[in-house]
Each structure stands twice: as C-alpha cells, then as structure tokens.
Image (cartoon, rainbow, N blue to C red):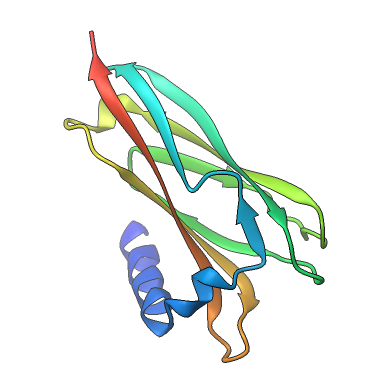
Length: 128
C-alpha cells in the first residue's frame, strides 16, 4: 500500500514545483525539531495551518514514512479556517537520526490543473 502511495506521490510531485509556492494553505512551520527522543518512545506533534485562500480546501493525502502515523483534517477547510496535521513518530522504527518527510497533497489544483502540495519535515536526535 505504501508503494502505491509513493508512486502516486512521485507522479503528482513531478507535475509542478510551482504549486507549492501558490498553495492556499499557510503552515505555521514547515519543519519541526522534536529535539532529543529515547528509543522506544512514541512522540506526538503536529503541523498547524490556515487556509489563506478565498475558497474551501481539501487535503487528499498525507504521505509519511513507516515510522510515522499521520491524521489530518479530512473535512472541508473553509477560507480563513485553520486545521492541523497530527503525527505520531514511533522511535522503534528508526535506527538513525534524520529528517523525516511529511508530504501533503491537496485536492485543490492550480490554474494548470496540478494539485497543490507541501513538503513538511521533522527532525529528532536520539538520547539516552
């Protein structure tokens, strides 16, 4: 299933990089530093956003690695409304410290018909 989402994501992202800069969503932060975590922990965090457009927005897909479970606002996000993408990072599923990608694809499209998307990420450090 992850492979199918990865293929879809790669296809969508290959259409246009311009879409990201004109997206109707404005994120409070596009990268989050979780700080030092212990192996075996599950760490909760979230990305918050606001719909800065004049129309409703829908998130179609949030793609992450196998170490992360994500949930997001699946309902219509009206103009001016805010929402969040919550995630749980399972440290047992990572061996090395690295940036973890969280890719967001909207149902909404730009004037050329390409879906809007965002590249988000979080980082962490392993500690004792």
